[in-house]
Image (cartoon, rainbow, N blue to C red; front, side, top):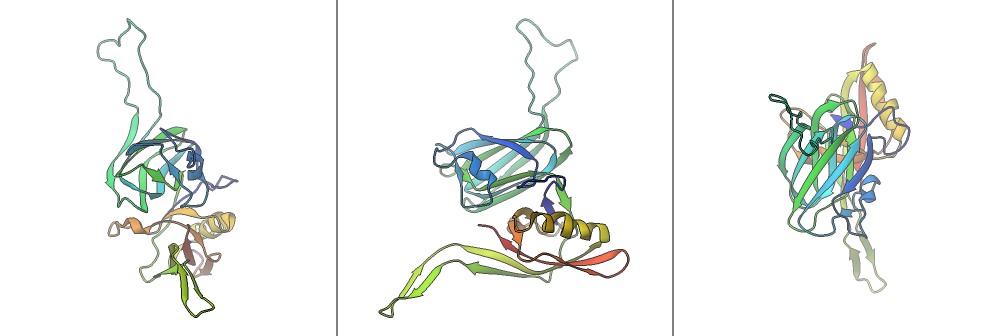
Length: 262
């Protein structure tokens, strides 16, 4: 299990992005919308079927993007520096500028609606740039971007429950007819449990979820080699504060529930 969060940060959204710019933005859907806690409050490009997001990151090793209509995404992680010789000057024989790119994530195919992506890249402990290129069937959009340090824990046990909350409105009118208005359905994950070392258990409870409270976080719920399902990449908050059961002097069981953000 992985969580994008800088435990040294004291302000929401507790990651390491210092700024995000877009190659273009619809005036009604600014890029600033990517940094709130609402997946349905979108950034949308001004036109076309391709757009680029450029995120400045103070340090980190992971990126998560939620609620995008992209059908393909590529990610470059690097210093963002470029070098150009002055007119008339060339490099000496055998010398060349080092390639800027540190990590290249191959294009990932997404469903084109409610798409989500998690990218792990080589840890960079100094300021760097993430360049995210989105390609969609229509004008590209996205709801949330988080990037930075990644806190890693054991995967929860497989015996957990995935449910949902239907936010639709249902009402019986005075004449007895049924009125309804379809709204979003969000997922819940209940009875999650994992056994961790005491320091990791305290970090999980006190250093992350008690610290952020109801703040949603970018979470890769399962990271095992046998689980490669983007549906377990969730932007979610804890339903109640996690509970610890101290099993021994070194191990603790963490019990918690999650509710997907909207």
